Image (cartoon, rainbow, N blue to C red; front, side):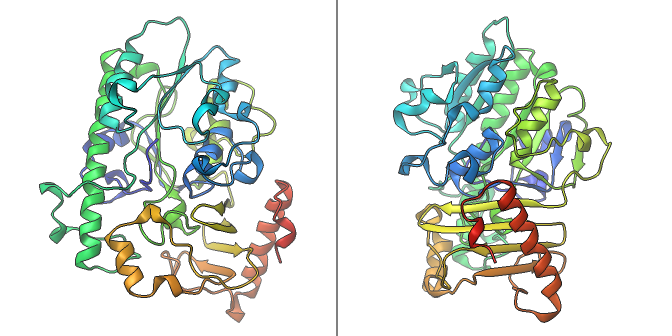
Length: 407
């Protein structure tokens, strides 16, 4: 699992030099419509690994700012251990701070003192190789979390000349945004190289044929209007899975799935009993071809990142509805996490004083960039009512503390 990559790799159509990820896509199952459950770092990972939404697992903000899960036994390693799995953590976990890492439940936390605690993927790859080389009499679960593609980006290389790159669609095409994009692309290239090394180690140790490999990220890239936002630019994540019994062949799935669906999917795949508390749905029927969709909608939330800004959303194939719970129209919380040329460019053009609407409704067919808010459009009143009700039902079903604030 990478940091801040969204779907910005070549298997998702981006002009980024990621040949190892592209090769992996041709061998695996790629989910084109996967969404995280919270587009901020710690909450997203907690949702992925607990199978619960952030307001249920307790991770409302960043671990290094004092937020924590309400019960670390919810982590998937504790379920897998009941079925004989040896679990190990290599690199970033970001759901528990400092001395609380042991509470997560890993059997092994790989010591990185020899590389000064680096979480760069090319530094982690040799440790993965050592782990795969070990002879053990039980199956394993390895969580490998790398720093890439989090800022600060490196300087762009010769393969990513800013003269010839295109910035993300929601940003203007300017020299500043092109430089920023070229630097991101260079880091994505570094990430891809490390992925290639890890996959080569699996092959070297003859583990490819009986290992399920899951490649994903926490949320959208660290550019203005993306990470920390409930638009698809913030929620959309890469998810590719390769392994025996169905996860092969370069298959592409367009049915919507959520990060909270990964835990129940693994349970069904392994034939183990899923914890009753899980809030996701197994997407094995998509993989087998039994169904073309398992969800009518996906849900997500933000509570705190750069500031306290509680909001929720529901997304169907056609519409997106976002609700903010602060009582007044607010200005954006400008996160330091996307500090770069694009952020500077937006600030120079008054980003910090843009008003945010309390309710937003978008038609994703005609407005995939989610720029034209239809919430106050009379002809959309029935759609707005339906989307409000969907969100309200979800909040009540999951005992969301903010459910009484919804209209």
